[in-house]
Length: 215
Image 1 (tube, one colour):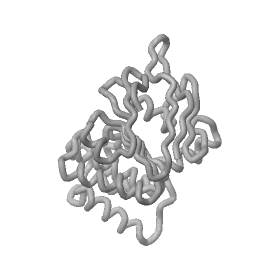
Image 2: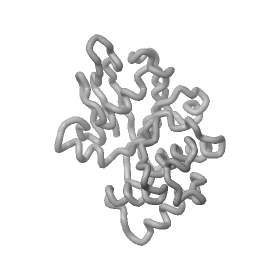
Image 3: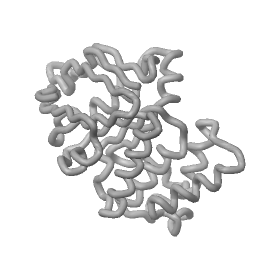
Image 4: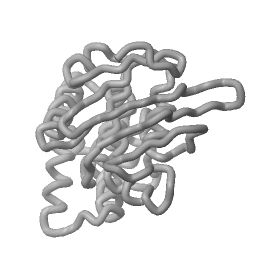
C-alpha cells in the first residue's frame, strides 16, 4: 500500500527527515514513533504529497505521490488525519462530511446513513450542525477523523490522532484501526504514545531527529 525509498527533506543544512525506506502492506499498521520534533509530521506531509521531498520517492498503491498524473491516483487511495485539524470556519460538521464525500465521488442512498453512523460512533451526533469555532479541540479532531473515514481509501495516515481525544474516543479509534486492517487496508500511525502504538500497531519504527534509530 505504501513504499518509500530514500525519502528525504532538508531545509538548507537542517535535515528534517533523513532518507526513509518504509513499506506498509495491506492489513498492517506501522507506527512511526518519536518525540515532538523527531520528523514524524514531516514524514506524513511527504507521504501525503503536501510537501516536496529533497530526494527520494513515495508511492501509494504503486502510484507516485509527487509526480503528476500518477499523484492523482495516489491521493485517491489515501486518507489523512493531520496533527492539527484543518476545517472551514463557515461549515458545520455535517457540511464537512458531505463536502469530502462529494469530492471523492461518494453518493447514493446510503450516504446519509454512513454519515449518521460516523457521527454516532465518534460522539458527534449532537454537534452535527456546529461550526468548528463551537467545538472543543477533541471534537475538531473527531471531525477530521470522520472526514477521513467518509471517503474510500486503501491507506489511512494518522498524525498524532489521539491528541485531545477522551478515553471513549480513543477506544473508538482503536476499533476503526482494527476494522481497517481486517478489511485489508493499511494504516500509518505517527505518535509519541507508547500505549496507543502498542495496542494498535503490528510494527513499530522509532525515529529521532529525522533518523530511524530502531525498527
